Length: 220
Image (cartoon, rainbow, N blue to C red; front, side, top):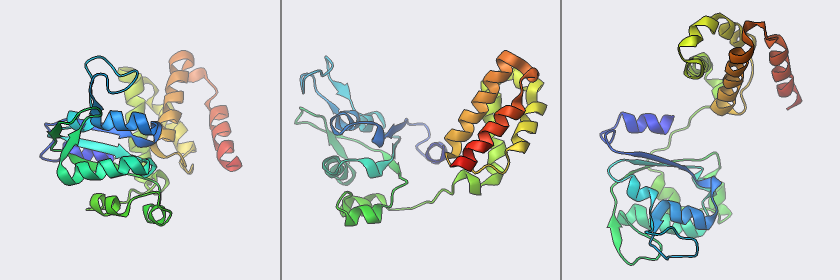
């Protein structure tokens, strides 16, 4: 959300916003996703080849989430892209110019990773032009009700107004919850409420849901 907001308020807002979770793919898949490949580049390659995310993000923004999970060999290729502002698809000799803003995120200590030789020092200083720390949701109490209401309205549509009192009552009872899973956990919790309201309405025992939810935190 933060990366999307940076893009939306920049002079690149009319360009594409492309995001990828770098921890969700293997080394080979990540390379092909980022840089693309030519037809026949490897077994299983799609006919006609594939355009990479950097090329898709041309004139816009690419968001590399969990950059600390990128394998060292891919880090070297990423560094070349950032320095030379061009990519080369797997199986190709042609270099393609790309003009992108790169935003990265990680919950890892990259300085410690550099000492362990799992993150390249030159890449760290290349991406570290401006460092921003986003506090966890539990330290942004004012955001909790705003975000939860957004998710509530999004899931229930116009029908949300018929259940808004129940929503506020539930959120009041969990206001001290720590939300260790941050926004994803908050979103999942609100979606659960919405599903129960759709199929059971106000008759559902939400006190039991809240109790089970708070007990989970005590166990953690």
